[in-house]
Every structure is written in structure tokens, then in C-alpha cells.
Length: 323
Ligand SMILES: [Zn+2]
View: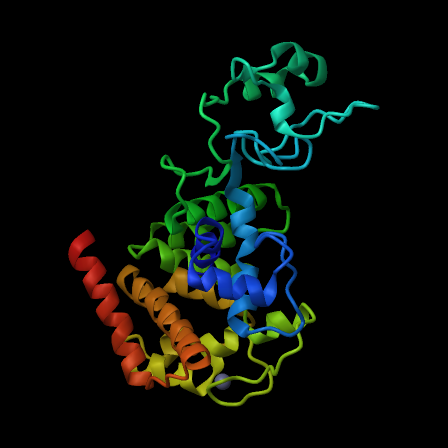
């Protein structure tokens, strides 16, 4: 997934891909701060849209702590912001985390911590182990035991965040929550669930979405030339997608009722399709999305029959191992 590619940019800055992208798009920034240029490749713009996920789960693991900003950087091992909650006292000149560490003993300067921070911050900061060796600061993924980014944990984070919003939102009905539950329970790979979560949140980097964010690009559908490439067009309304659904055992009519928008479509299918059919529905949507990417990124044109078959094959392979 794209967030994984973004994570590789952070972890392997010396790789050939990272160097090329950095030289071209963000020579004077880190990947997380790099602006999305008006002129840039579709791939780069798409990777940038995945940054929000990385920003939600990444924090600095304190090493030498040079350059980590006490007040602005995410370095406190406490979700969800990973930042101190204490406001910077007036006339406080403290700026880098290394100033909070006694260099002679490599321990936290407790007196300074107690002077500057509120007790909850102090408690968490004191729990951060300090190495005697001055290791480099590392950007880690907070939601994994080995601190390594994984699609699975990103999905969990994204889903949990949505759950909180759904529970506190007055506009979300029971039907929508039921739809999420069905997706959550579906017997499909985590990456498929993550893709559908993004689809329903409207955060897939379609041309229509990028264009809305003032990224100037040609917005027509790569398959049929329709004026605006929206998510529901690619997945359901495009003639290519129609061919894929017809070729699948679901048939077009089962998944293309006259629902108004993408949410309604997803909820209808989550509610009405038998469990096994809903699993195939999820895989087929994923396969259509990938076929679009293959076409755009690699100029590889797959037939609707191949795409439909690919979804069945992936689902069968997963089911044979996990059911
Ligand atoms: Zn189309």
C-alpha cells in the first residue's frame, strides 16, 4: 500500500528510489514535510496522500535526541498526539530534548522536568529509557511491538479512529455502524478491509479527489474516457467495472442496485449479500482498483475477465488458508 511506500522513504533514505524522489520532489524537506507540488507524477501525489496515516502513528524514539523539538515534535510515547501537553512556559528557552538529559549519567534531569512539565508529562517522559551509547534518533511506528510499520496495524489504527468518530457523531446512523461491523468481520485480508475503509471515507487518490485538492491533472477515466474519474465511477459505474461484475459470479444486478452514492452502495451490499458473496464483493472492488492502477502506472491493460478471475483466485487462496 502507499503508506508502506512512504514508510520505506523514511526508513531507507539512502535507497535509490528514496534518493530519486527526494532529489526531484523534496530536496529541502523531510518526506513528512514535503509539499505536494502542482507539477509532479501521479505516483508521488498518491504517496503523499498516504502521509496522514504515517503522521498518526509515528513518533521519535529518543537516541542522542539532537534536533528533536521538545514542544513541536512527536516524541512522547503516549497516543494520540505523541507530544507534550504542557504549554511552553513564558520565557522558557528549552528547545531540544537533549537539554533534558544529564550527559554525565545519561539520565533524565528530574529537577528540570519537574520545573517545566506537568506531572502527567513528567511521568511519561521518565518512562523513556535512555541508552548510554549515543544512538541516532529513530522514527518508529508506535503501534507495533517491533516498532515497524505494518499495513495491519495501520488498518487497526484507522479503524479505531473511525470508531471513535462514529460513536461521537450524531449524523451516523445504526446502519452505517452495522456496515462497518460487517466489513470488520469479513473473511478477507487486512489490506482489502483497509482499501474499503478508505473508499468509504472518500480518501482514495482518485483523479477527482486530487483535482479537488487543486492538483492540476487530466481527470477523465482511464478505462472509458468519462469526464470525471470518481471512486464510484471506477468501481461500479464505469463500463469496465460493469464487465468485471458481469464476469463475476455476483453478476452486475446483485451489486448495482440504484443506490444514490458510494456509502449507500456499500451498505446495501454489506446488508443484502450473503457472507461469502460479500467477501467476493470486497475482493472484486479491490481487483478493479488495482486494474486501474496497473493501467495508469504501468500502462498495463487487463481484461475485465482477468480482473474478475483474479479476485476469485485471491479470495480462494486466502480462504483455503484461513477458513
Ligand atoms: Zn470509466
